[in-house]
Length: 265
Image 1 (cartoon, rainbow, N blue to C red):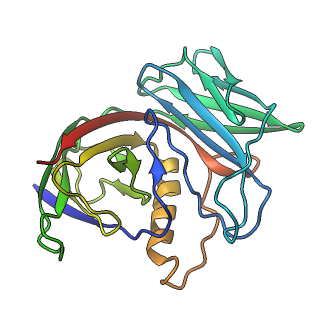
Image 2 (image 1 turned 60 degrees about the horizontal axis):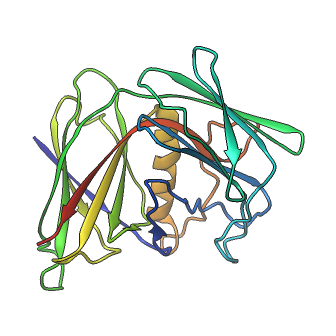
């Protein structure tokens, strides 16, 4: 068994939890007006969401203007094309697509005559066994709790994970990404040493575990490193690597997703 600790460095307000779909503050530096694509295809039935917006300078509001009127599709490996229809400005959705592990999906986004493409292969599902809590012995606040995630990493296959923590329906706006270079085939107990939010009895905690492909792991791990070395650490945020071509800010991710809920007592 192996125990891992995430130390969260929090410097932006939490995001609102909404039906497992997230608005991500991408930390993209001071240039503005670039297309931002946030595209997630999961193995869960329901609405799949792709969001298009324009980034703004860090010195300004972090509300990105939506990009409307785009043509957005996702194609599966069998040639089936799923159109994504715009509802809320900048938000494109499809209710018929359910991702499957092992399938490669291709996204196409056409904006102002330019077509942006990306591909992602949905990894195998890894079960999130449970989430638990315990007293946070490192906290100066009485009753503070620490969340632990438990799962079995499959042996002899590469796996990459992203974990998302919500407390009382608010997403902890910090990034947790890891691969299994040092945990391959082991049972993992993973502690969130959360410095950014207090967790006390009566709180409701959600943890989502996504099994992501290598390209998306590189994307999230890059952002994770930036939050560690960002404000106070002396490193200016830069554009993370993307799987979108021609270059656009953001990502396209086909991944499995599973959520566990815990009420702190």
